[in-house]
Length: 353
Image 1 (cartoon, rainbow, N blue to C red):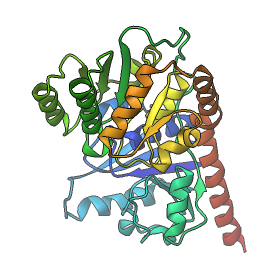
Image 2 (cartoon, rainbow, N blue to C red):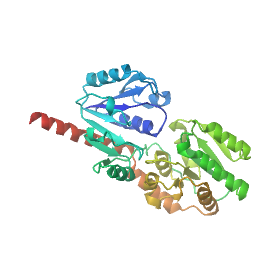
Image 3 (cartoon, rainbow, N blue to C red):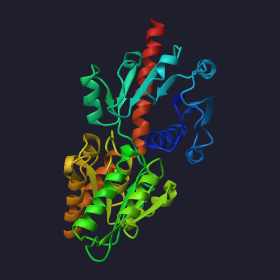
Image 4 (cartoon, rainbow, N blue to C red):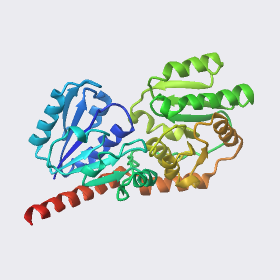
């Protein structure tokens, strides 16, 4: 099967990470290509994609009104002779003129439904996204969880403990929507208002909020409690997740939560905002702790309770099993392949008749 994945960019982010993992699985048995519309390809992402996958960039400048890259896009799609196009970006289809059947993955509850009727199949990355998509008038989307390489994550083997300085980690782009500024505010509350100091927070990631976070740490005297490591490849933090005592996801908007699933697979306790997508990753509270989204006091309360309580070993083990059973990228890739095959078979049946 010839599969073409279409996306705005290959920047560092959850969607792009998932795309790289999926194409690497699919190209083992199929002819796979990626077409990137904008002139935005992160070398860290590109290097992770198998050389068997052909990558074409239309080199459109961000927000450009130049029609040439979009004309080039349609030529590229025609030339590909793909059996199916998998679209990962909002508002792309308005520029496409093709008879090739298209499948769309909906990655969040922020997506517009205006184009959904043009796709042969809609996929939602979680039950919560599926429910929201149904409320927009499209009840038949198929849930396909984002996948992680559970076999590459080294699970924790040493006992969880409350002794010493507890090591807390948060992995994600330093953008407002990811909520690290909220996490830093919770740290301020713990240290400066409540005198809780038996922890250290490590932030992995970079972005537009970095200077804001650095200023907050300096002004509030928190330099000794928080370390910013910047962007790190997965090969860096996959073997190191197990060395932390808690993973925190403070996002203000999130359709799923790849890094949350990764932490579960590393057998460390997890804590997340109470958005539907991340809560689904932890079995709606069965496999981890939660706090009120956007509420720094609620997050500080949850952190303080964690720091004062013995770890729930049974919960951590259950989270590990749940992640292995539900969020392995091999299962994600295979589920998409089954959807493509159904779409292609349906097209061929109509052509014959």
